[in-house]
Every structure is written in C-alpha cells, then in structure tokens.
Image 1 (cartoon, rainbow, N blue to C red):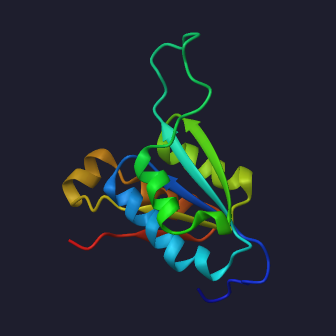
Image 2: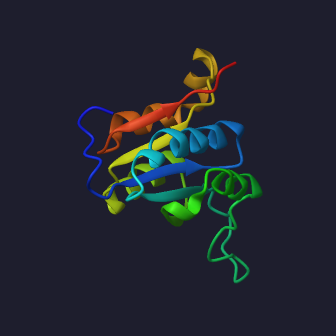
Image 3: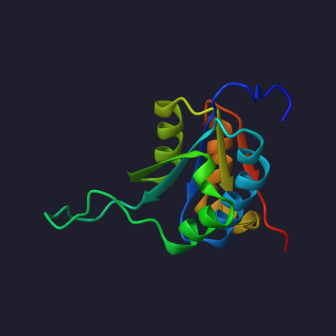
Length: 144
C-alpha cells in the first residue's frame, strides 16, 4: 500500500460477522496487511443488531464465532495485538463511528457481491463505509 508507513504501529479494524465474506476479508488482512507489520493492532469489530427490548439477560459482549478464532489461529495471531470490539445498531453507522473513535489507520471489510437490484434495496454497508470512513477502506471480494 503506497504511503503506508510500516515503521509506526497501525490500528487495523476488520469488520467481522458469521459470513464467508467476512472470514475471507480477515484472512486476506492477516496475509497481506498484518504480516508485513508486526507492530499492528488488529481490531475485530462485530456489530450485532440491537435487540428489540433490552433485558437484564443481554450479554455485555459477544463471543466471536469459531470461524474468527480458527482464522486467527491459522495465521499465527500471537505475533500481533488483538482487540475485540462489539457494537450494536445499524452496521454501517457503527463501523464508521468505531473507526473514527479508535482513530483507525485502515478499515478492512468483505463484500457480499450483491447485484444492482439487491444493493439498491438493501444498501451496501461496504460502499457506505468506503464513502464515509475517515481512513482508507479495503473491500475484499471473494473469487466466484
């Protein structure tokens, strides 16, 4: 990545969920960004939809799915600092707000590869974040 100073610690936020696209983006990040700079802090950001009613049983945090843990183990996550952040709300807003709050240097996220019609109806979280995040955004597409 041109202009990325690899001598200073960098904070890389990876938006993760249970999707294959998310796991592919995390794997790509570990192979292509983090391995080049062991001074990086990798922030795994999971956004859960807000519950319709808050109860005393709401968990304070989310246990990251086994796929995330397996991916981190596969790429030797013991060489980097890892933070886990859980947000609640509209994914696109939580991701952009978290990136700004953490002063992230890079945001990495997967792309579901929706077609025009589905993207027009549902919206694209990655497209929204690419336009509004205050740091470089890497959108990782899976090969079909």
